[in-house]
Length: 392
Image (cartoon, rainbow, N blue to C red; front, top):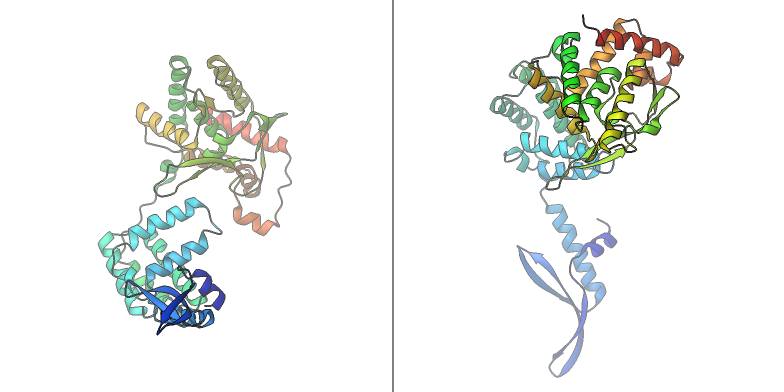
């Protein structure tokens, strides 16, 4: 610890005062420190002497301090807060509570945790929590990151996790086998799309103020992310082109209400989607409906309460699936369906990645280029919309 930092972080004032002893007046300096949970007064003849004492006291305290796994996790998340979103930190803390809170492991001195301690902890938590393979992989990721952080910051000399990695396969056998959804579960069939669209038409007629289903219909046609749909503005649609340049972000902080902001796209890049005839028809119907109820705003999907947030769009498709008696689907299922249909029609992975806003491993590290014209993309989207809207 640097001397300046120690003195700057000392919580008590250093004051000069006069004392009388044997009829003589002396000048002394006083301050306080915490010892064994109690405040203790410190006296010295000079300010320099009291500062020297404080430096020695806090240096010794730091050297004797036990750093637990929990302490190191808190340091790690403090560092991560500078480079990741609030939502990511929220997920870290939720996972920490699930995996580590109230365990002996979190209170262990990280300096003395060894390979055996980690293996025993992992084995016990997998059996106790009945973890799936994916959850176990996430858990190992946290332990790996925290021990790497501790090693790089000289909290520990040797990272014990490197000796654990070769033995993870044995613990992995204790996990519950992941149940992966098949393509029918992860996408929406033409028949289900037809059923949903019929329900939407019924809602448009009976509940003209209910704008949210239009946003779900837009997802079925475009495959856009739910945050992109919520953030879409009318000014983003021009000359037959939809420019995706914004996305809604939800910020979760423990003990506080969820807040929503409009920020850049997930990849940080804009992308263009050509407007098909089905999309143009939908947008015209949305505009007319919003004008009729007086809710039209700068955002494409707005009701009398203002911009329709992502959560309401996501809830809408789930609720409508329940109402019509089909298996529950998500907005992301719409996205997978559009992408899968485009690929089945022969669109190249590079062009599909460009249209959907995927990275495709950053399109082979940004060296594969999408040179297709928008007319080609529009033709593919027209065919996709036709296939999805005509189930019979």
